[in-house]
Image 1 (cartoon, rainbow, N blue to C red):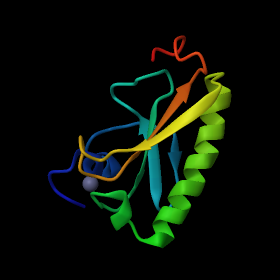
Image 2 (cartoon, helix red, strand yellow):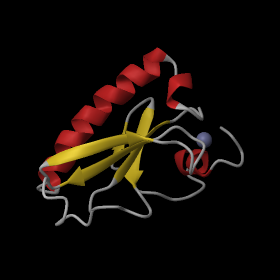
Image 3 (cartoon, rainbow, N blue to C red):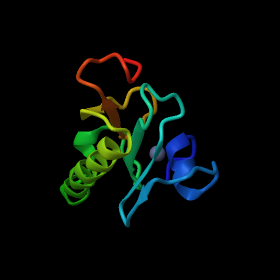
Length: 110
Ligand SMILES: [Zn+2]
């Protein structure tokens, strides 16, 4: 855990958050400023700043979980597809954005 990292605080429960997915290595929770309904963040429990620093054993699971979560969000939000992006600049704890989208790009707020 990195002391000044907001995501690490979420993981250890210092900032109460409802996890929409959790396993041994990962947690998911709603983005505090959703771009569209259902916008979810999926993060490794261990602190790494950039996705390419995450060990393969975690990143393989991370991507598999993202695929499953995307299918769930697609169904829950009646979305046409789910966008995946990894930026990592706003909060320096590697995180995937899963963003349900409509093909028209309008009716889900984009
Ligand atoms: Zn962190």
